[in-house]
Length: 284
Length: 320
Image 1: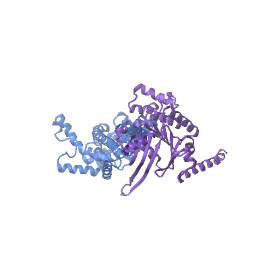
Image 2 (image 1 turned 30 degrees about the vertical axis):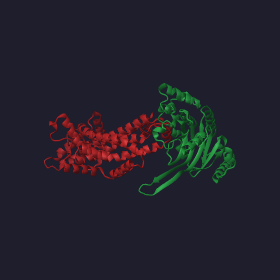
Image 3 (image 1 turned 90 degrees about the vertical axis):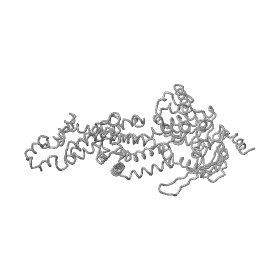
Image 4 (image 1 turned 180 degrees about the vertical axis):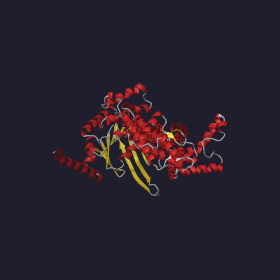
């Protein structure tokens, strides 16, 4: 069995298989020969099981978004492999990626910045379908309205600017756009941060519903360990560009093996208890 | 009052304020057109006093300003002492020449700066980016005057291009195409000077705006949906990066009458520049005020045009 056949076999079980991924950023300052090298990803291995929600946690700057961008084919890794549905996608030229892109979609943290302010809600949701040549004209608009209704937005708002929507509604719009192409993998990059608790719960319920109806696999990037503890099937912990711990929710939260995982959990508990003690004072 | 109504009212107020200041400052300058006539022994002081009275120069400034405003409404824009004719007829011919020069230059600058700026913003740190940034740094440090003199020296030594003026001596005897060729040949030096002076600033603005927009999440999202590079750059990123460029476009339109005065004087282009210089030297008050006011009108119109375009292009501005 060749190495490629072996890799294909391993990738078969998982929807996404990441192997020894490296990504380095080199910055140069003006009028200086000095280079600033940042190893954003170092030897990252990760497997995403189909129709599971895998949470990627870690402190700021640990490389979570870089990994998400590499998976979404928005950035090319310097070394390593990314297998998606038995295909190695990290080294393919842009024209070959065009047909793969619909299968991996991303919902960004900044809902206001992620929606083109020059388009209406229907145009935003229909944009991926138009770009991929799947729908045109009246059918495109009709499908966009259906998608809006699927995520709990009224089709009457189809001609509104994204600026007219609230943060939670904008995130719903971004989700509608992301599922328009019927992807297999949906990457949620801090998509729930910045939303109030009620809206967060509503969006989470929506995500849970569409996960079932669309057979979706989620990669949830979050700082909120309480949230992750409630919704994730698997958890991967990133630290300084590497995945230091990966397992089921029970394994990672029940018996954390790495010091940085324990630190994250302790920090979350401290934050929660501080919040609880501060709340009565804030009310008075 | 809506956004454009407010901008229009603002523009009109600005125009009134500018006209008062323009008239006041021109009037405060020492001496008058008739001071040199006084030195002529053949003209008696009585005649000079009669001429001053005829042109209303013995009246207080507010009265003269009122008369000037009246003449503006009549379409005369005051009266030139030196040319003995209404200022508007002088301005018309010279402004047409200036507009030809600056219009061609502005068109070329935008045609070069926008695609080039988009291209280098899409290849940050590449050889094209470094070459453009290096060249624009050099160009920014060279004054317009030096550029014009450099081109003139080159033209004198090589005899490839005509030096000075807008047309050859035998222009009237030339055929239609030869006339156009002659005009283009005369345009090359002043247009190139203006283009090289304006290009670095505009190119850097296009690059900076595009670089910022290309990092926006909605651009990343569009890439994720499979939007092609050219469409992404010109249909998604460029409209989003257009706001500062539209403001600059307003300034470009605003500078159509005033942006080339120095270059016109140095290269001998018969536009408003040499007229303003002559009028200032001879203290031809109403011509000076006329040139300044026509430049101000263009500046205000350019800014208003930019406001209209901003409101049309960006829903965020309309919402304000």
